[in-house]
Image (cartoon, rainbow, N blue to C red):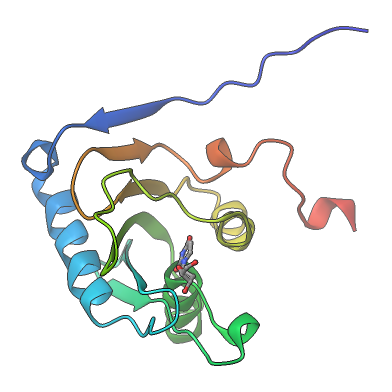
Length: 160
Ligand code: THU
C-alpha cells in the first residue's frame, strides 16, 4: 500500500483587470452570454465563452426547461455548438461566469462534474490543454492550466 499525491494548481486573480487582454475579452464575451441565459427556474445564469485556435469565440449559456432534467449547462451548450460548427477545432481557453437574481455570486463558479467530463474528451482528442478561467458575478477569478487538472482519475475512451 502506498499513498500518492494528486496535485493541481490554479492562479487566483483579484479582479478582471489582472487578466491578460485576451482573457479579459473572453470573459466579457462570457458575461454577455450569461445575460442571455434562459434560467427562469434556478434564476442562476451562467455564461461560457470558448476561444478557438482559429481566433473564433463561441459562446453559450444555460438553457432550462419546465421538465427540469431537460435543461443544459452553459459550458456544454458552448462546446457542442463549437464542435458542431467546427468539427476539427482546437479549444485554447474557456471563460465561465455565473450570476443570480436572488443572491450575489461572489465565489468563482467552476464547471460541474458532467461538464468537466464532456470537456475532457475534447481536451484529450485535441492533445492540447484547455485553460479554464472562471468567476461568479463579482470577486476572484480562478484559472487552471487544463481541464484534466480539474478531473483526476477521469474516465475516457481508453477504458472501453
Ligand atoms: N449550470 C451551468 O450552466 N453550468 C455549471 O457548470 C453548473 C450549473 C446551470 C444549470 C442550471 O441551469 C443552473 O446553472 C443551476 O444549476
